[in-house]
Length: 424
Ligand code: ASP
Ligand code: MG
Image 1: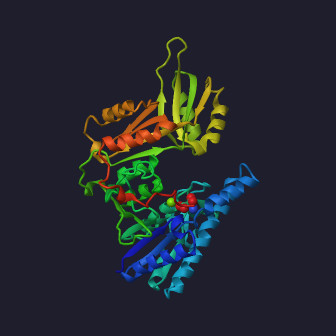
Image 2 (image 1 turned 60 degrees about the horizontal axis):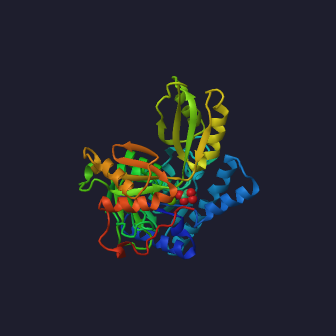
Image 3 (image 1 turned 90 degrees about the vertical axis):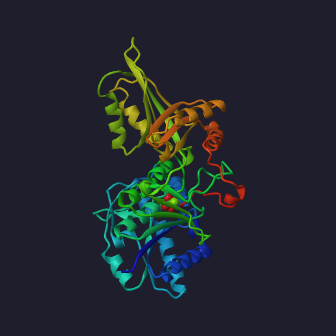
């Protein structure tokens, strides 16, 4: 049986017609290798951002349904253009949007998860020798409503398709050459990783590395889809392979450093220290689809028998969060609700830190030497995150990258590869 390769092109890789031609040639190259090819594309360049801006000009709080109707159109343009570009080279190609295939999602607008992908039509078209071009980022509900998977979601569309089709590999073509030890714009000696595990990539993606949509990595891990992040413009460079941790040889405790500048911290002050209060706060936030990251509950104050709960969220969920908490304030007898957006989460990630003591203390000492105050700390088996003031994020990343010996040998290695935020 012929192997299926899923390729995904991000916004910057299809930003104009020249780039679309380049993507078409990359697709054809894979087809010429004797493989069946399914291509997933994002909207061209900054299209999605422009659409969001137009919506906000007309309505400050546009309804989620109409936002999905609007944003899903971006990918509709790029799939048809890419299919035409492939046809112009003499190859048979056909484009499909999510409802045409049956990329089924939950009934949630703007952040839907994929539930199922129907593969009959895809398999039939592949059998006819066609190259298939699929719209990323969008899905459809049982009732035929259009949904989107969240910004950057076409990575997830690609990996989910690869899993559904049992593909050999999923190649994510982008404008960077792979996954780096940290953002090369912040540390010019950042080095490209040849391999990284799903687990580490997942933590890095959540910690603010903008290379991949976190859910794409989750899906790849769950279905064991080998994932490659590689450059659209340097085809002979194999980029970074993301695979199961058990297949890796790990030498260094830390694989990468990331900073997330889009967090906000909330402190709910003076809440009664009794059972059920945290449950109430976080269940109400969950109902609004708000994900919470770091959580700290302070020691109970003896006299008033109250404590504070501080947590972080994505800044884009701030309005919803405030509204939810204001609605609960009286019921839980809370005092003030404090908000701080001038913060950043700096994380170190590495499967090699398991069972290796001293990593956390090295991180904290390094930050102390830089005069960086730590406001919150959270850890997982393979990640340590510190919340710091936004203005300190850059020097924190630079110092941590150095102390954990992640610097590449030469600066030239990363020249010209500054990552643009992908997927627009
Ligand atoms: N076009 C969508 C976005 O900008 C999806 C993607 O590019 O992955 O978020
Ligand atoms: Mg993207």
